[in-house]
Image 1 (cartoon, rainbow, N blue to C red):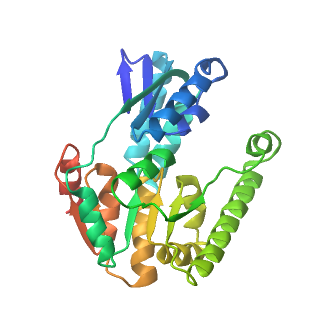
Image 2: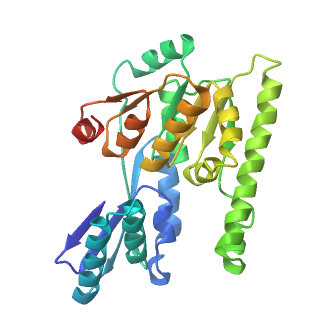
Length: 293
């Protein structure tokens, strides 16, 4: 979410901790309190939006606008990446404003419908941009998660991550996080093997950063083995590209017929990758209809 006022004041909104990573040294006055609020909102199942801003002079804006236009008009295959890089370089040193929260109520009959699909043996995966706490609460509300299910949670948070960022290169951090994610997947596989000897059902919950590593060529088969063995899968903080890659992985890796359902522009790639893509008409539904058809 972006808002320009007079082209000199840029206000940015994001739904995750990525916003905190973009704050400047002078923009963290309300960080601790905002993190507490976001956690409380998420645990209550609310959709959160973190707001921050910075002032931009006319020359800086003109330079950014030119670079962004060039990236958008690029004919190369990595156009989306070029646009992301331009935006990423510009949305830095922000000043935190705070966070908002709204309730996104489930439509009537959704929990009962999902429960019947589960009973029919249909595997259900949720790919969402929501925070993990929000996704888990929604999972319980719509019967994707049920009491008695054992949760396998794969997170990109590792011990000493902050200290590692200060003294290590990006490649070292990448390697450490990937090693942690792979280890968590292997531990999940062990739990899966043990659960096959009992009546225990498992649910897999993974965050977006972890999913980045789980979808790499040397890890994706191991991840898929774990995921398809679980009764439910929730992928949190997923990007549009990740949603599409997960749909492709399941379709090509299992040979099963895949059905993807979405109602927003972020779901288009996923709908196109699945064997059957269903775009739901709603507040955002018309964003899906034309590009996914």
